[in-house]
Length: 120
Image (tube, rainbow, N blue to C red):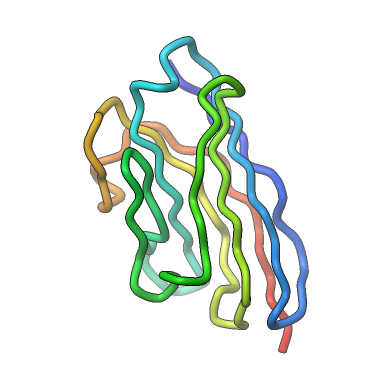
């Protein structure tokens, strides 16, 4: 069983930055592939970034950076050059895999989400 808790969301102006954190429980965190997804109102859940190696969704590549600290059981999402269209609830997800996973159905554990709002 893995529990995920996101933090770091908030309100930021366009062009600004935020860093999201996802703290995971469990003793085998390093064996899990981790991902970030987002969901805006009325839209499907969208892949943002994943880490085993790293991989990014096209809409965030070059602006967002995913990283992990296995000693702290934490994965991060550094978001720079934020745009109003980045506004969404951001979710952290985990699945027991050593490979990159980019589809929501490939993830078994989910956090509760953290709201990111980017004003124009």
